[in-house]
Image 1: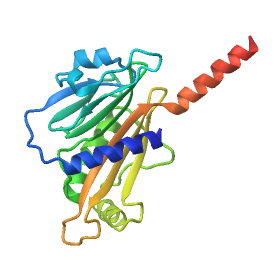
Image 2: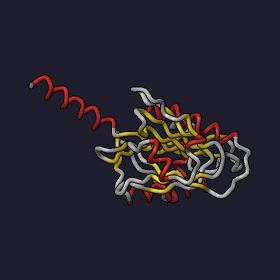
Image 3: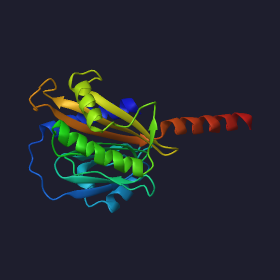
Length: 223
């Protein structure tokens, strides 16, 4: 899951960084992993059909919906694990078998200063915590105390963590998420000119899916 999200998120960051478009009133995409393409179309005010490579009518059923200009709000519409992201300039929704397979976005309209970015990180982190998302892969939540922010700033800015802090989250038996803050511009600048992006990538809970397939194979063999 991580490799797939990372590839999409690199594209997302490039689109955010290069966008010089003027924001208009936001529209919304209402979506979650497993929704059909038709469900996304019906639930969203964003023009999904004209902004998509519509899923193919074959066994693969692959396709994608692209947000390439401001301003679009992503509403993750799960009744338990749902949340609403701030307006964005970029998002990508991937489909397999005509169903949402991946969601990737940088939930912001432009690169932000460290203070602005960590303020947004705090808002998002509080949403994820309140919605029941759990830490995964031994990662830790962002330490957003004054001392924690200062330490994290130096670690990211100097590249001690690959110019980023990444949190792996899981909605057990349903979804997994990559939640990342990273330096995107002038990382070694000490005059406040360093700029940051937040990346979010969501897919199915692959660990649970793998175990489910394993149990199904074992059941078939034993029959």
